[in-house]
Image 1 (spheres, rainbow, N blue to C red):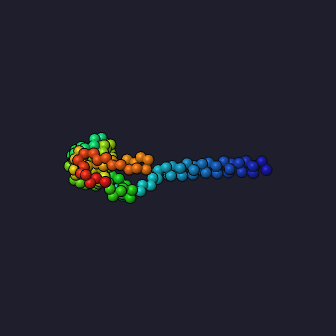
Image 2: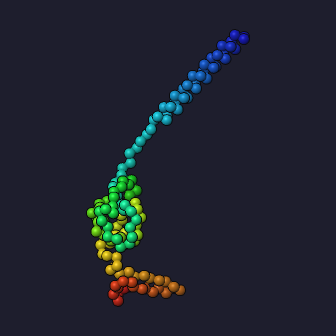
Image 3: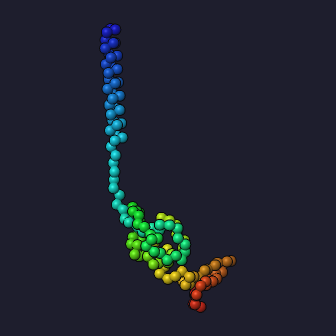
Length: 136
């Protein structure tokens, strides 16, 4: 009986050893296997540095960066030629994408701006810059 217990114990130890080796190899195989899924991208024009309102954009102000295609809005400009020579409507930050509503073909100082204010249920308009009398 003692003989059978000794053999059973040895078989158990060998089995545990083999199981340990299998686990170590499986972990090594899983850690070395990397799945890379390529995501389609598009090139988007972004500003290289912070720029102030009214600045006329030059080619040196711009760079192109890849953006994930499915999450890139249509308003993000993809050609630097569409941005060069335009005036920036509001301050922009470094790395910010060039979008249509940030740019104007007219100098900012000459664009009429109407400010509407609502107080106590009454709306009033104030025209800043060169507005005509027909501002709403």
